[in-house]
Image 1 (cartoon, rainbow, N blue to C red):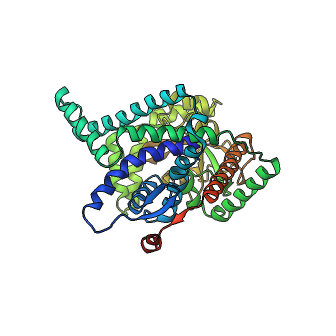
Image 2: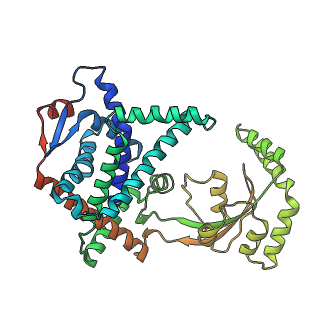
Image 3: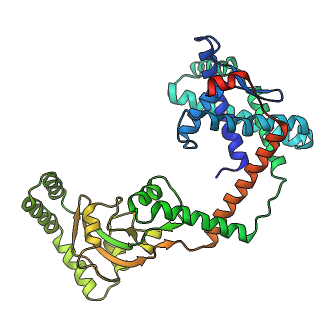
Length: 394
């Protein structure tokens, strides 16, 4: 969830991006860019909405780059509303003159940094000082011609900060009952999505950084020792696995194990003599991921996992791995040879309502109330939708 300052800063930078697109479109079609909404004197153009919808989609904020309704909503709340409110309240009542000057300087540095990054990306870093200055002036001129020169950026930046300062004076009283009921709502939503659906759960958590308050049953915490094997033997094993000859695959696997048999015997011998698996990880393991929380809690492995290689999963649920504390036979993957350790059973179901989870729920509730306040302000001002709104927005 983004703070008000983060959202405003993002929108200010986005303005620089889509302003160029607007002017180019205007030259190629008849009336391609009508005003579709007004908030007092602030007008929102159709092409602004189109460009910002594309930007929001690339940021993962909306599911479709044609979700123009959401883009218009964001532009009204986070772009038009701050400008209108700060104008009404008076910027001098929100920020000191000293702070305003400081923000002007900060805005100029950001603006220049944007241009410098653009030049570095498209022109490289080998320009002479003379050529660099010429390119810089060209890019800055393009921004200015598109209606977004440095002075406009500085003014919008300060307005955004002034609005954030005003907004942050409002406090929100969120009760313990509200936090707990919201947490329970999250739990039930996640349960409906993920109960019995390990694939969906793992894709959400591992690939989309989704924070789930419900975990499917059946996970084990697995630590392991990864041993580097002979590269040629691993290549031969990978080639064999591309076919369907089970005997060839087993022979190639045996060759991989044989290539590091001496080290395997050494490790298993130490296990039999009672050495802790953690100490053996520290001594022999070559997997950099087996550290920190992964070392403490183990990799979360489910028999239906889509995250780990099938050989690794099969090893984690093999006959040798029946109880916490069990150690697997050697497991061969394309990474080398693994010795797996059954560290723990991971409780499924509802996650523990920790202070960290509570803080995340609080942030969500606060953001919800902040959003409601912004929408109330927008409603109080009243948005005027033009005749072109229905025509172009559908």
